Length: 183
Image (cartoon, rainbow, N blue to C red; front, side):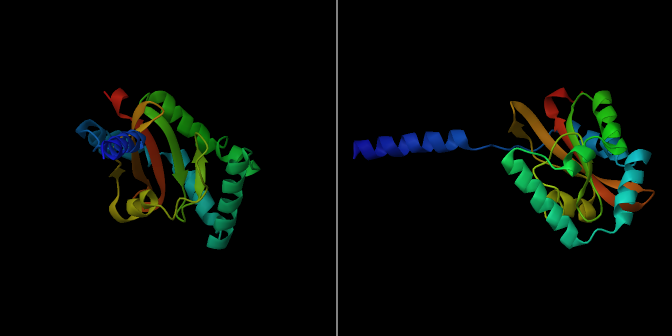
């Protein structure tokens, strides 16, 4: 019986050490999200890029096909031309300038109104964000501040803000925030 108890105790330690524990974001991150980060979603270059992609009129079938190709390339350790394009277009260059101006930002990616990526500072796991809560909830609720999670030894909160042209919500911006670097 002692052996079983020891096994259960060791199993508990192993399982707990593999878990990622999340905590609510500190108030300073919430305040930042509702001020500076919300303003980033109104950037003229970002809005123009999102509007251009929205005007292309991709169908959901086309978006899902791109998503499948994207995911397959990631699994194979390769890229497709669109991945490189979305990290080097004018919108991505603007995102990189935003990151340089705000050292607490670890990544940014932007989507159009259907959830397909428009621009990004690093590769995302997939192309289509439209099936994820971070995309859907921004359209329903506005600014979202995710719980703090450990990523690469950093305490990161994902902040999602609407991309807006005036009052018109045209897309979403998702910003990785290193909570330990927020002033």
